[in-house]
Length: 119
Image (cartoon, rainbow, N blue to C red; front, side, top):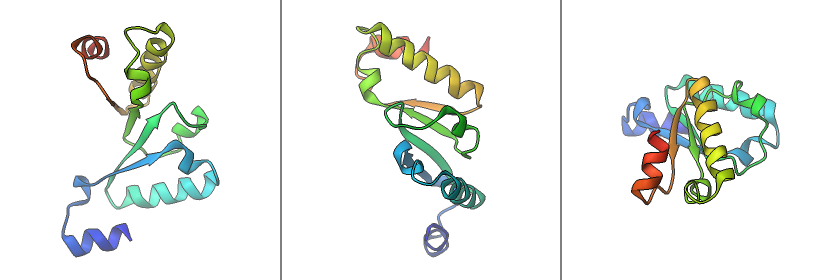
């Protein structure tokens, strides 16, 4: 369906980012990996949304052809008040960078949160 929509609209695949939640992958990993690779072959970008709130195994991250990890706002909102959330956010950022993935932090509302994330 994605291929048909791209053809019908003329949208360049690179302009489309498909956001998927972690839980979407967990029912059948083999099928999910095949489907994700098929979508990636079209040239679209793929993001895992709300990373850290689902049940995925870290080992699957290297199998998924994703481009972006999106950190859930529930972690971001408390990074200046909760050392555990701050540690999780730092770990997610380091993990993503080590896997050559981009990172998006959802729900940044204060200059302090932004400064922490930039650091």
